[in-house]
Length: 434
Image (cartoon, rainbow, N blue to C red; front, side, top):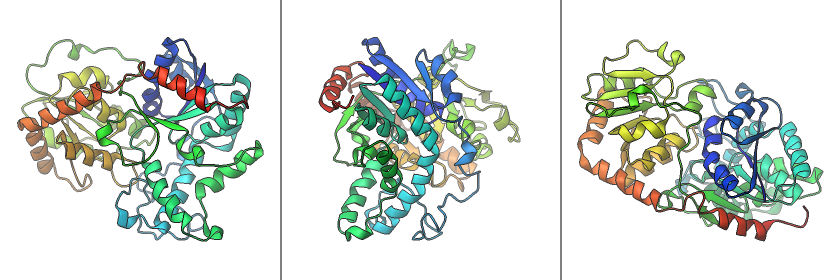
């Protein structure tokens, strides 16, 4: 069968799809990855085939600069008060009122439109009509994909990048919508996608939001309580093209700690979301070698690099973390999952509100006992952070809990294991419209 993958134009999102794409490819299926033209080279470096669609990616077109409010305009969401944090990551039942969820949908639909602008949707639909995929696998934020799948009659499934926040809130939101008079049921996602689908002779339904089923690389113990057809798959770390540096070619002399702030913040958002100087002060003098993945721009903002810290622009997490006693990071999906894969205790510094699911992730890791979530990254002191890191390094319970998460991950099916299950789903969902 033919399988079309698509994701937002960010390396972390792309890398999360590569192991499954290669599992399908090695099982004999044709695989291509559609993305913005400036992601084509990154795709081909994975050994897969790229399909450029839409305009080149410009993050400044829809991602606010650091410090700017992430709020919709009154024209977009007049019901939203200015002091609200509009997050799909809001899980507290008392906060999930209809008006709040409506505002969340309005605010994030603007973001989703930036990921899938109309020229991209047109290009993707055109390619799908020509190539006629049997299956479209899409990142949960890439809403052009289900439109293209519906138009060409392909089966389609989401491949989660993080927690399924959208499906979690949608279940409550649609329940509240059903209680309102029909004339007051205004769904921003439907209002955006319905006229686009109508251009191609199709109509909107909930499959356009959550897919026909979802391929989920999260541990079942960390999954949000959502009634939805999930297909569990083991997370397989992929870090892109990399060369193992000399520093990893022999065991560390003592303890080693990894400090990383992730790729997306520095390559897409152009700003760190955690206080780098504070973190470096916290690890100064620690009885451990600290490997910090900081580039030249990040180092230019730092007053001093402690003697026990070794900086390197990039090192593959999959190669570095097995030698580490702990990892300090910002709660990104790839880093967190790779730490779980190698049973490494975590100190998580989730950024301010609006960063999708980092805070929820961090709390789940803390609840598991495999790490600690720093509750206020913006106000944490170096002394407080050092105390947290010391506890994670010294208390054996963190290592035991991290080993338990790793065992759970190893017990889930590999990408290759789920290929037959995917084939069965495709046979059930593909339509004669192809």
